[in-house]
Image 1 (tube, rainbow, N blue to C red):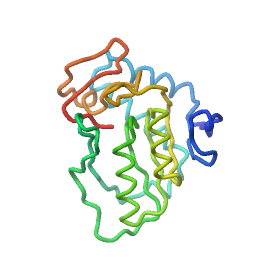
Image 2 (image 1 turned 180 degrees about the vertical axis):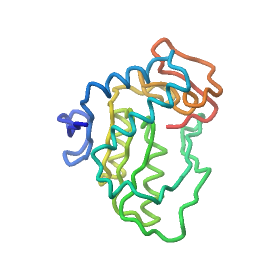
Image 3 (image 1 turned 60 degrees about the vertical axis):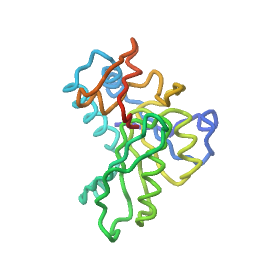
Length: 199
């Protein structure tokens, strides 16, 4: 699955040494189009999200994809847009050098910035982030706080709404995966909302 370092890092407002890898595969682009479609139901959405994540991680050496698989639960408060940690079962001692973080969307980047900070305090020295879509502003804020991370992404969208959601984006990834508490769907699929909107 071919990837390319984004050729216009400067145009994104990022430092030249920022590690942004953007997939260019047409099959992945097709799957992403289906993922963005507001008519895509929850079952297909989960399937597509799983496939896209697999493709994006294809270039990561298999030696880095072995257990342990750890869960750190974060969500973004929909009113304050601040990250909230609701689950943390990281072992007391860190015995890994590299962590691969799966983040469906990087909107404002608040939750992923907080997640990376927690992992660094825990002791992880190398962090790779796999995400379907990132906003330009989100990437800018992420690399301002954590210039040493690597982001592997299927698309980079230009705009954030006033509520901190990527436009066109693909809506709220949590709601769309589990078909929960969706009370508004825009024509382009970009504004699914819930009480706690995750990034």
